[in-house]
Length: 318
Image (cartoon, rainbow, N blue to C red; front, top):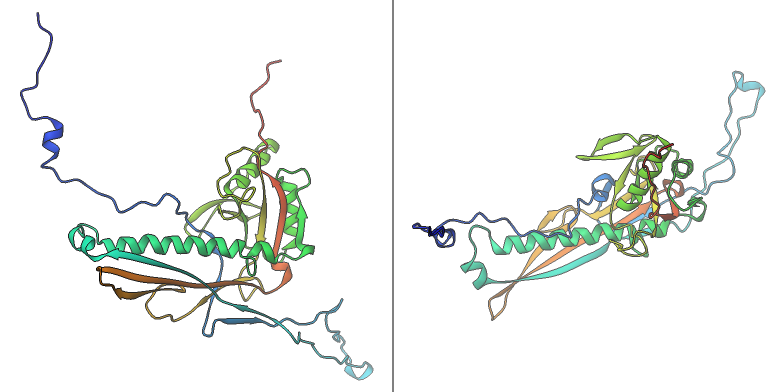
């Protein structure tokens, strides 16, 4: 008996030629949630310059009188000295030009507008660069603005609860968040698991994060491990930052230019540059940003953190 079968019906490949295909917008795998720009407080500028005026502080604050009888005592006199050359932060620009062939946009503009999709991905890329600059910029990046007295070393390499407790002593005035590479956070969680003190989770800025002593650990791949975002080896070293943010708290403040023409989002504008003789439309993307540290104790760093320590939790038979 012949067991071969033939299908006397239209097959899948042929039928698919007449069907509608559900399509997604372009997906960019390198994009991240960019939590740093969501949890950091920002201040808009009008002139692109932000001057941080600090008081020249001595060992003790200005003396004051506390007495019931003012006739028998002398009220102390004095004044508050200001820095004569305060630091000024100037906004840096992050720019990109995106080109779109108008013929391609005309012919293949449904269901998604090609110009809009190109611009959307370009904007996301510029914002990724912004977060990286907030952390790594040589002039205003957080890593490069930690005072020497605010830096500590991981005692045994791996990030332990004791290390984060020590970091909290450096930014004890209302700390806002830790900032760490995802692998550093995973390494810290392993240390907590080993000691039987799993950290609790908190919800802020629309996300769920683990916390230590009530302070959330915010992940970002812009705090590199051995200088790269995605290290291939299990071992590697990085830093964990602790940040107090907000102008009212004398903390770290993100800066941007307010009221830009053609503003698409905070501090970012998109300008149409025209169409050339070949029908290529051009757009200029400009994002203006910087970061200011209002007080030295608003920022601290745990350095030389090893992320490659693992443990065997299997129960050993007796």
